Each structure stands twice: as structure tokens, then as C-alpha cells.
Image (cartoon, rainbow, N blue to C red):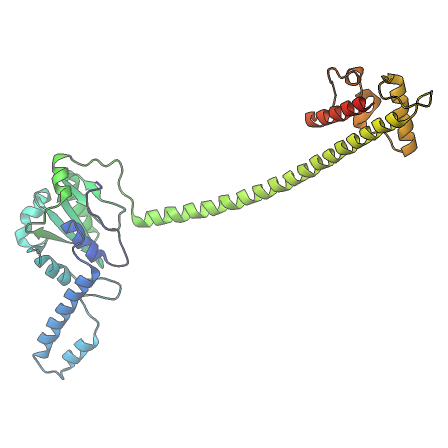
Length: 331
């Protein structure tokens, strides 16, 4: 399917898309077709000028816009027909009396061009299969031979004018490949208008999702800041506890014993350590922090053996244990 040449609709250049799909290549541009339209306009002007140049008919003809093209990119059937004659191809109405076989057995033909109001589309046989190469579709549409006749009848019922293309079409790679390996289509190609609507809905949905995501993100940031403040406060409490523990150890170290001599090697009795700490807090007029109360100093800590603390924050426990260990070593 990728080998089939197909142009998607741009502006009102469906005539250009239709011709290039028929010829299976980028053979005509809007400029080429506009040049053909100007030639046709000039030919009509010359025919009108053969009569009286001052006649109302001629003057009215000069004032009227071109019937072969307009600013949107539309081109008339005369332009299409003259463009095909460059390739020695003929454009014959489907309703022509000579097209009886085409109407009875359309699958025996090679291609059709259809027009409704200002839209042109091509139906062509490539390899052994038929394809709808409408530029309003996202890609070629595979048509069975059985459905081909029904599709042409449907188009006629919708008001399309159908033309049979007679002549030898230029060779193309897709024709050779599909003659050996027929194409398989899993789903019908969508109209470009459907794609645009789907993309618009997708963008709208993305913007809504983005809005909720922003709100959720803001809530998460606020919650994180609150949690960060709580953690910071806990860390400050821990630092304060460590500071007090060190001060206790220093005070206990500098305080003279019963003999008036400061001892640095003599082990400190547990009761004596509690008494000194209590004296320190009474001097400082400070309530002992919860993390360094007597219950937080089991004998195992003092003897530098296994540390067992009850605080839920493992990091804080380790920091307190290190501070206590330091104070015991200082003692």
C-alpha cells in the first residue's frame, strides 16, 4: 500500500491530486494547471473577439471571472481534459452511449475520474486490484471488483459525474509489485475530517489531563514542603539533643570528684552519671529532651555494646547513639 502514490487534500487542489493519483506520480502542479486554464481562457476570448468587440456579450465576458479556475485552486473539467491529452488520454462521460460495456462491467476498465461540484477524485486499477484514491482520505482505499460497481452507482446517486479514462496510463512501480503481491487492507482509511476531529479531541483531552496533572503536582509540592518542614524540625531537635548530650559529657568530665581531682580514666558510676546530668539540666533550667532521658541510656550504650533505641527514625537513633558514645569516651 505504501507504493501507491496518493496525495492528501490541500486547499481546493483536488484536481491536481486527482490527476497525479491517476498517473501515479507528481506530474502536475497547481501552476501547470493554472497555465492550462489561462490558455483556455485566452482561446475563449479570441473566439468571442471574432465578433463585435463592443458587443454587450463580449464586454460582459471580459468582466466575468474565469470559468476554468478560481483563487481557491479549483479547475474545470476542460482543464482536466486538456491536461490528460498531454498523455494521450481521453476523458469520456460514463453516461456516453459508447460506454455501455463500462457501465455493465466497470471492472474491465482501467480507471475512472469522478466530480461532484468542486471536488475531483480518482478510482484506478493498480495491479489486479481497484483503489479509491480520493484525496479526502488519509490513504488509498482497497475496493473489490464486486464493490466497484456498487460504489460507482452510489457516487452517481450522490450527484457525482463519472468519466471513464481511455488510453495507456504511464507505468508505475506499484502496478508491477501489486500484480505479483496483492495488497491487504486491515481497515478502511479514515476521512481527513475525521482525523482532524480526533486530533482536536486528543489535544483537548491532553490539555485537560495537563491541567489536572498541574493541580496534582502543586498538591504534591505543598505536601512535600510540609513534610520537609516536619523533617527539618525533627533534625533540629536531634541536633539540639546531640549538643546537650555533648555539653553534659563535657560538664561531667570537668566536674571534680570527691578528692577534688578531675578523673579522665576512672569509669563513671551509672547513678553518678544520672545525678550529674540532672544537676546540669537544673542549672540550665532546661527540661531534658525526650530523646535523651534516662530511659534512653540503657547500660548497653554506656558499656559501648549493642545499641537498642526506641525512636522510630533510624537515622536519628544512630546520630544520638554516636553522640552518647562520644560523651562516654570523653568521660
